[in-house]
Amino acid sequence: MLLKKNYDLIIFGATGDLAQRKLFPALYQLEKKKYLVSSIRIVGVSRTDYTIKEYLDIIYNSLKKFLNENIQSSVWKSFKKRLIFITIDINQIQDFAKLIPYFKKKNSTIINYLAVSSDIFEKIFEGLSSVKLNTLNSKIVVEKPIGKSLSTFSIIEKSIKKYFFKKNIFRIDHYLGKKTILNLIRLKFFNPIFNKYLNKRYIDHVQITLSESIGIENRWNYFNNTGQIIDMVQNHMLQIISIFAMKKPKLFNRKNICNEKIKILKSLRIINQKNIHDYVSLGQYSSGNINNHIVKAYINEKTAQKNSSTETFVAIKLYIDTKKWKNIPFYIRTGKRLFKKSSKIVIFFKNQQNILFKNKYIHTTLNRMKIDLQPILDIFSKNKTKELQLNSNTTYKKNKLFGEDKQLFLKNHSLEEYERLFIEIMQDRQFLFVQQKEVIYAWKWIDPIIQAYKNCPTLLQYYNSGTWGPQSAFNLIKKDKKKWDNT
Ligand code: BG6
Image 1 (cartoon, rainbow, N blue to C red):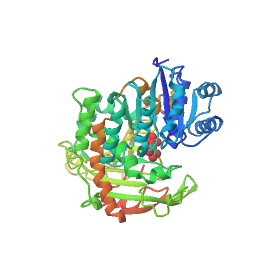
Image 2 (tube, protein in one colour; image 1 turned 90 degrees about the vertical axis):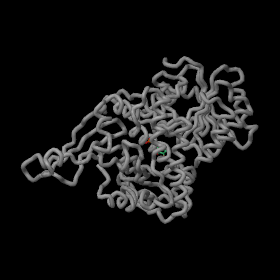
Image 3 (cartoon, rainbow, N blue to C red; image 1 turned 45 degrees about the horizontal axis):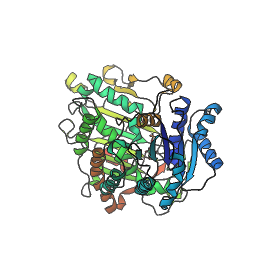
């Protein structure tokens, strides 16, 4: 058993999409691996009035759906003993008293996990404080996106600090818990060739794709008030960019890493109403075909409003104005209902042949290095080798440079991101969590983009589900004589 402290967990939003898709499967895995303290209770809170049987059925079915393996009856038996369910209407502060009987006598540290929209964080802080569950040691875990803008984020931060101690605040961006992202940090800083060649002398441009084939599932309300820019770019994408682009910190600790990441965030060239047309493409999915299934348009999803102009796709051309990255374009894109799930960084190198072969072998296709971020970290180089052969066939050679063993990875089922993040919280370690300043600078860059889109609604184009996004995303990169890597 890894963890010795006495913990209890309260999950607000226990029957929501995040809890079902990610949190309970992760907790089940921790149970299976015997990482949970024997006394831990997992109190699920939701506004709907379920009986305990109905609640257990919901959790069981979500495990069945999202676990990627069969549920072991012995593990489920011990896991379900920990599950408690309470209905709380957060607008009724007196409802929070329902938590008291569970915590009155027990001397445990409480982890309050808010798997709900940040619009209602404040009400929950107040409710917890009204029943004194925000003790000296109580932890508060908040999910991204925190707020919808810098100003709403600041209000939430003020309020969270009113009720909880700084050391007990855990801001989650689950990408930071992914092993592949941790490996990217390792690879960058402990592998000298990597840093040496990542600069404007060698790089032509960088592409980052976080694409998904799923739609917005049962989260229309959340998503429609959020949109893809805030759901994915403000957090996951900016984390990847800042980790990829940051300089090696003097000391390899959280503070120094964070400072280096912030330098990147501060250097992102501003995109606003004046230049949004040159730098941003936005889309919303129409119906289409994904894996031989016809899927609905965004506006026909359950509970949707037909006139929604929320973006489900965004592509951005951005620049990082630091000495190292100046004028190297980064093309980033992320969207729902795209051709396939893919998370990758592709680095396109400048042609070196003209240096090597005195201009004799100049061609237009660039050599590239692809870093696959999911499900395992894989790095390939793809080199055009035509010029070195004496026949006329152009071939691409795909060379694996670095990679984890997929079979071994699946067999060992090493910790998934939320398992790792739960353990870190229980161990009181902040290393994998986002600092307030990072969020501030992320919002500073995102706010003008969101504002500009509000003022230019015609930017939104429709794309068929199962494709790589709207035409404007192709044009964004084509006008620079480049092409998205869709391999
Ligand atoms: C979440 C977003 O943060 O990340 C979801 O809210 C998205 O919209 C998910 O589907 C993607 O995460 P992953 O780990 O599947 O790439």
